[in-house]
Image 1 (cartoon, rainbow, N blue to C red):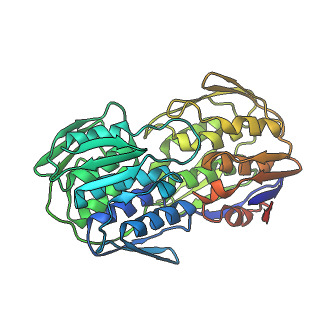
Image 2: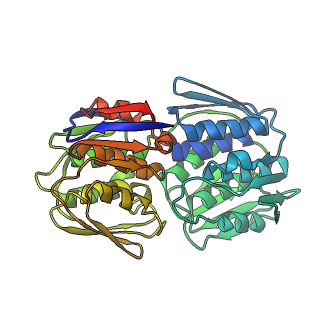
Image 3: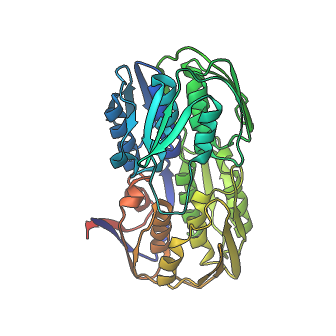
Length: 417
């Protein structure tokens, strides 16, 4: 098992490049199952989660190849309708194969998903949507079993906004007979990316960018080539790192429009920005102001940046409060940050953060993907040496994060524990 050894109290400066969006690529990989033939995805990083999904697609019968940022998926021979526990338990996004398998093979047997330990994330919205489209759903021995001779278009109302349920339903509805309409659909850029791919394949989906999506069923789709959007969470992680520095940092190959809520909060902190079409230069403040934060569905502040922003607030001049309404239990990083001499107390699902003058290096343990990134950022600014163990979490969603940050002036080494 590997760990990071971070020599702290480092000032960052320079330019850092953002990779393709993991959370956009995972559903798009599943969507490629709908179009027999070879689809090609570009701007694809080398991540553990993408390797896990690729392995799952191979089990189903697809051929997946990856080389230098390009992934090809040939789904011509897809014939196996089961996603086994051994793979699905490793990553929640494996549930994305439910819709495509049901639509193409008329049957899907998918294990209940696993992933990061950040709280309960039920799949009931996915199942209700599939039932609305005419699928027969049963739960047996830890597996979701869905069958339908032909899906039928329907009106689907989501009780709450869900990226996963929105995307899964889209992938099933493209082959449903007639028209489907989705209400309270998620607005995240990852949803838009999936819509772009499906429409490029020949689907008929309208309403992109709104919470009401209309789908006219088609009989078949064809393979395409498409470049993936930049990762807004990786970009946000680097912007938070820049806010804790004393020199400007340029985050390149990003989409500023996807980062509005974070940029607004960083302006409250005291940061200033120079924004171009595909890059953001952050000028850090001389004094970090305390800011209260509430995570919300897009375009609100993303839960996936809550842990990183919490690190920034540990150095604020005053008290701030952070509440995660998406995953109320997503605070496992708090205990580890307190080991670095942060001053954070919890009251239910609200973190009260009293800023300190400096963090102090220590040994800490990564508990999930975004908590890992938060601990790395904390280690960079902490005095002394910080050791972050169980970094396999961070490799799920960040491609060579230590190499990228070292190019800015960090000193992070990867070593066997």
